Length: 235
Image (cartoon, rainbow, N blue to C red; front, top):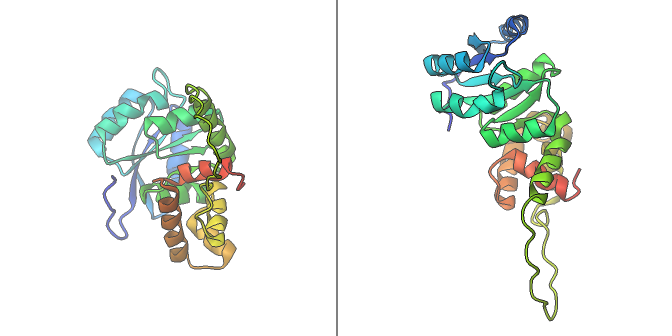
């Protein structure tokens, strides 16, 4: 788990992208916000691993399309080099296979390079705080990837017939109406602050509801909760 940052200490970021101009532009963009500081950059997976080992950043912004070894394939080595680092994919790829592979490989989130500056900063902060951040445009593809993986599993043998079938409670039945509303916002990629603003409640109240939702659904991440919400027709 990522160590808790000291109050007012900027988030230390390593930028990994093979395009020099993009790295420079992204570094300049991030330099405008005091919450973050770019401590280094790299143009390929090997250099990224060396820099991660040297710098031990709080977060790595990782492109997938790198020369030699793709970003997704580099994830295990990066996380081994910097175990307390969170990795946030920042890529042009909207392919659901890339998304699924990144999350399976240990990425904490997946953003598109079309993200606005404020949204990127918000995603960085949320990721370092322990959230799993997925670009809103990718939510439906995350569900598709999840269902595709499930469909490849061997079919479950049919259960013996029951004398009187009993209807099972759905996974969302334990949630209150307010928790369902908040889960819907989570599944649409909204932050706690955005959900609080939409429903006219405090952000701390939203955080408490999110904790209750994760506990009731028996999951540990917002991503998994979003999958359950989508599978059960909440969005």
